[in-house]
Length: 431
Ligand SMILES: Cc1ncc(COP(=O)(O)O)c(C=O)c1O
Image (cartoon, rainbow, N blue to C red; front, side):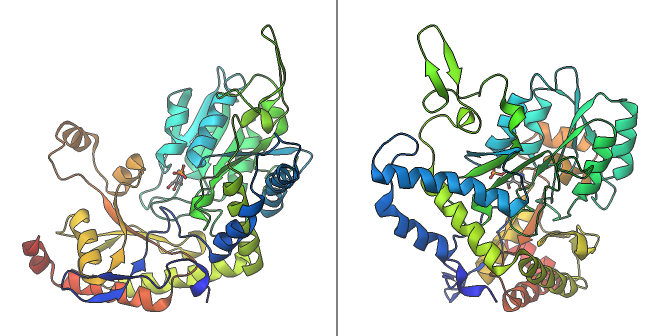
């Protein structure tokens, strides 16, 4: 349906047997190819490219306007409020979460941050190494335990300052009921950060009205996962978060006044964006949002969900296949993780590439605690893996669909996976 919209949709690759086939990219959770509309917009804008906020010339004025317009486009896309929110452009989700973690240091002093076992390392380490943290458990299927969340909030009696959870997992694709979580967190006086890296490209999103119990306080996401791989990460937050103090990076663009004795900081977001901003990244992100909106996030969600349902149905009966999924496709994005018993995940990923021209990801996907839980690996076994790097490390294989993937690709993938599942011995001996 959206097949021709991205660069490289029709790429080919050579299999190990020498034949040339269509390349199937099922690694969209890592990063997505650019929209053609984004590439066109970049080429169209390029003749006007100039410095943002720094020049009096015609091109500089246009460049500044486009850069600032990008913030309005983001706010409109995620249901933000121009008077209340600020949109800070950074490098990626990781940098956005690190900024928030640094800038909340006064607010979260003596508080506890609740992260969870299902988080990407980027929503785990910035909290773990700066704050007292605790981690919300996951159920055996990998879904976040809302019961444990509420128990922990009760246990800490108002001392939890922030609940930091992903909108969707990059391992299972499970979506979290973020507005319900917001309501629970607010009830106990905590705020909520949604790591939107895997949710924003796939589903409609709404911060919800300020003052509503379901309001999302902070949101982070990356443009390279939404068809605009030109180095932009976004942090949406209340302006008030940045009133006091100053950024972890300071310098050009962050001030109103400087003397050798004294500094008056600029208002957010400028205060938080040191150095020459990534204008082309913002042009790309703005155009990708325009394109996503014109296609309709609901339609995109529906198409990707249909592909996921189709894939899971084809995969269900494959011999020796273990799927790390509860099959609740209404509450997940288009990501499926699995293993074939008797084959190492690295080997399986290699076979899919060599014999099917299918690009997937394997390993722990920067979410090691979560994968350890899904694989039910004990702490003692983890110690063994930790101390012996030569041991084949645990992991999974992941496929993740973008809006341009189609049923034929899923069918070809499932057919090869079935062949592998039926002939594990043969494939193991080949490695
Ligand atoms: C859920 C989640 N959070 C955060 C990140 C980090 O994103 P980035 O690498 O763009 O900083 C990723 C990347 O895969 C992710 O999947």
